[in-house]
Image (cartoon, rainbow, N blue to C red; front, side, top):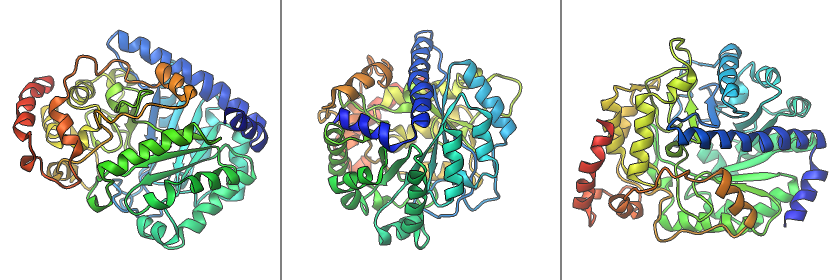
Length: 437
C-alpha cells in the first residue's frame, strides 16, 4: 500500500509541488508541532495549525451551515493576513487552513498565497470557482492544496447544498485541479443522507482512479440557526465511520485524514489540545469554527497574537473542554460552554447575533467520544505519525470523564434529564464550574 501511494505521489502530481509539500508542510509541519509541544510544557499555547475564515460569503446554502453566508460580505484583507502570518511564522508555523464561506470568492485569495511562498495553504472549498485557469495558477504557486467537498450523489448534493447541479460543477473543479496535477483532496461531511453513498470502498477506489491524493471524512455537527439535527449520525454510524477510516488507511493508496482520534483510537478535541484554533472573517479569535464567541481580535494592536491565544477565555475553554470530555464539549455539554461565555463576557461573533440562543437551545448529542469502543490504527505509519505529531499531548491526563461518558451514547435530540445517570452529570458539573470562575 505504501509503495503504491509513493508511486502515485511521484507520477500523478507535479514533482515540484510534491517537493514543496514535503519541504514546507511535511518537514515544516513537524517542526511546528515540536515547537507546540515545547510551549505546552511551559504552560503556553500557540496553535501550529491555524484555520482562517477569509470570507463569509458563499454561493451555496448548505443545510446546517453556521456561517452568515447571506450577510454583507466581509473579507480578511491581504494586509491583515500578512500580519497574522508573520506573527505565526515567528512562532514556527507554516500551515494555514483557509475556510469560509467559500474562500475562492475572496478577490485577492491567490495573491495572499503568492505573498507567502514559505507557507502551505489548504483551502476548504466547494470547487465551483476552480476554473482551468485558476487551477493552472494553483500549480504555478505550488504551495496550495484544494480540499474540495463532495456531499453525495446528484440528488443529495442538491438537497444538502441548497442549489441545483451542485455535484457536476464540483466535479468539474476537481477535474480541473487534477488535469493540472495539483495536489488535490476531497472531503465529505458525513451525515445520514450521504453515509451509505460515500463511506464506501467503491468511492475510495473512484477517488484513487481520478487521481485524488487524499480524502477527509468529517462528521456533520448540528450548529447554527437551522442546525437540522435529523442529519446527525447515530453513535453506531460514528463508530462505523471510524472503523472504515482505519481499515481503508491500511488498505488503500490514498491518504485519509482525521482530526479527532489519536493512534490508539482515543478521542480528542483539536481545540482542547491547542493544536488548532480559528479566526473568523471579522478577525475574531475563536476556539474552533463552531464556537462562535470571542474576546479578542487579530485587529487589536494592543496585544500580540501570542498573548491573544493565551487569553483567559481561550485558556479556560481548553481547560474546561479537557476536564469535561475527550469529545466535543459543544455537543456534549453546551450548558457548560454557555457558562464559560458568560464568565468571560465573550461576544457573539456572528452577524445574526443569535449564537447564544442557539447554544442554549441545544440538547445533548453524541460526539466522537465513545469510551470502551476505541478502534486503534492498523497502519503502523499512521500510528507512528499520531504518536509523535497528533496526539492529546497529555492535556487529558488525570481527568475523570465518568460523568460525560454516559452522555456520549445519547441519540441526537435526546434530553439528558431523561437518561440514567443525569444526577451524576449534575454532580460532575459542580466540580467543573470552578475551572471557569
